[in-house]
Image (cartoon, rainbow, N blue to C red):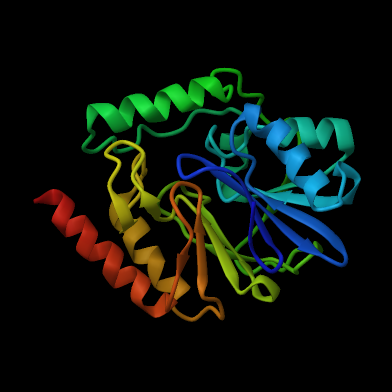
Length: 241
């Protein structure tokens, strides 16, 4: 689905991945679940593209619902997969800390896990090779994506700033649809390793030249990035009751 000039989304408000389309080719941001592979191919075809046009895949972090088809794209089409050095082992299937589960509502929880099951969430293939990146790196990919370190959800969580698309892809640095409660709007994401650090990291969005915030879960958000951190903090306080 085309969201805006240069921006396409596959998946839905439960789990999403994105494509940045420029004259130089396509950059994929996150890889959803394994079953999103067919949606990737269909979206590329609708764009008049093929996997040969994909120049790289950037992971916002190494969790299983973000690396779904990454290894397949790397192995079958030679696409390099970029991930922050602090999450490289996570993307390869290494151990990760026990994250905060937080509140849940039965209907939303069942919906999330049922969708993940349908989309191959139990057959994740971890990465065997990655290109490690650091905060501040500008990657040699379509749209010249810049890595913005956003530690908290995981040690190597990043946002991906693409100025030509007027967008920042935030992974699970925040969410606009809590997969465990169904609550919508800007708010902290569940399964976060260090919740307070994740909130602090949101200050890094304020200075970016973008108006689109594109999360891994939930609807795209459009507005002033300077307001994001305060809104997410207010939602965090409200959720605690």
